[in-house]
Image (cartoon, rainbow over all chains, first blue to last red; front, side, top):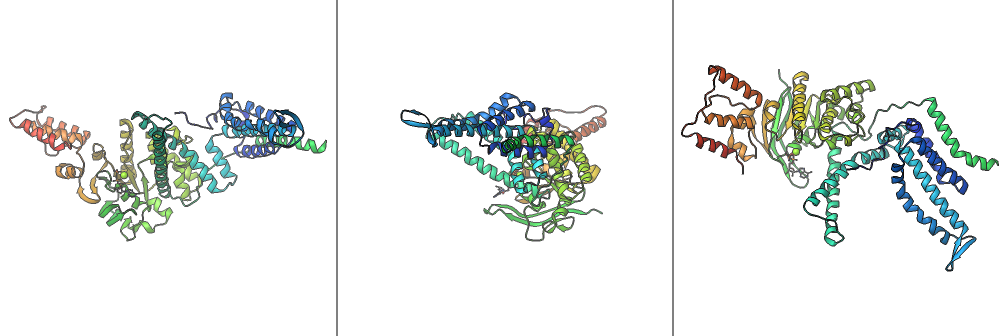
Length: 253
Length: 304
Ligand SMILES: Nc1ncnc2c1ncn2[C@@H]1O[C@H](COP(=O)(O)OP(=O)(O)OP(=O)(O)O)[C@@H](O)[C@H]1O
Ligand SMILES: [Mg+2]
């Protein structure tokens, strides 16, 4: 079984992998913020280019990156076609009496560029450290405990859950069940989902019991040792400057 | 002077849906003892254990650990006394890495970082998982997860260790490792051990005394006493260790010994002794009733 692990390539060595987790989260968050709110097409193109460079520096395999991005593209590419026909503005051309606008086209392109760059940045951030490190870094950054615990348990039990699903699926397969588009197959699928919900509910109960038996009182504490060095401050400063630079240059020029 | 580690007096428990799980259960475990609880599926073993860590609190004052009511103990105090290792390791390794899991208890106890690290190291060394600190549980085998779950309880250094099905689903090597670790903890560190299990072949090595639980306590005594009672075994879906049965059959072939061995170790001792007493020989033969007697024994162990 191939797990959908986001941190499969976390053990590679690159400047981005070695960047302090907390500094990475902060500077990438700022980068993503600026990338998402960009309104000029030329800057959006530069941002996309910059995201590519970061992925290149991080040495993440292209196939891995494309595999994650393709779903996002599938979702946002239609905007490139929809927006020109729906947004108001100056006419670009008319097809069969339907007006295509210049503003719509720009808007569509902006949406695609923003989304792609943002997803690439998120991917670069998450895929270059182990997920447990991400969680601990968030913990160190004083993200609310409830949120951390939700992330932590999701990360821990998604694999257990997947295994459970696969076991049931195989058991059904070995008893001759085939997924077809009929009522029977659908109702069986419903049963499996139902069983999974009951099972995870019961598991949650047992996990809670074992947490209680280890003295859990509401907030999990972990021990983390991160070490910010001058290099980390320098990279963070560089990344944040690159995010802000286009805006400053717009204002100054 | 021996001290009572666990004392449970006439404990009753029904689940909210009405299932009566425990009825008038009285169990006493001395400090330093190894006690095994056996009984069929659904006998209430796991339910009983949930009383020992305060998950289920008895309303009466009848579950005591080292003389103190467990239901009224403060959390930090309770986890120093009793550590429970449940059946499914996936339920107990809930943190992102093995280090975090093993450190979870000690951190909750309020220990300082140095002490937490020392305990994690020691617990992992005990179960043979040093070097696995940074592993994530979903990259480990079932047996390794089982060991890690034990380490996550050992790091709290409890005086009583309670284990639910410790040997289930382990390969032979891991099973032997696990039995050795448990016995070492009992012998070297004086930790009181309480185990629930179905693995009767491993039982003799792990127990000084046995309770047979089937909602109520149906029998109590040494492993030999329990396994000699055939009707007790049949009524509770249990069986005797293979070695014990084999020697019963040998007895029909004229093998002479007083105490039938329960484990391989005992078997070797018994055989050595008989051979030495018989001037280097062992005498077996078939007489007119042998086949009949063997058949009877085979039949009495056949539950089908
Ligand atoms: N959460 C629950 N709600 C209702 N009934 C339960 C619950 N958990 C267990 N039971 C019932 O209580 C009884 C005792 O269950 P328990 O799990 O203690 O048995 P066990 O001796 O541990 O069995 P096994 O050997 O199969 O692990 C069973 O009849 C079981 O169906
Ligand atoms: Mg059980």
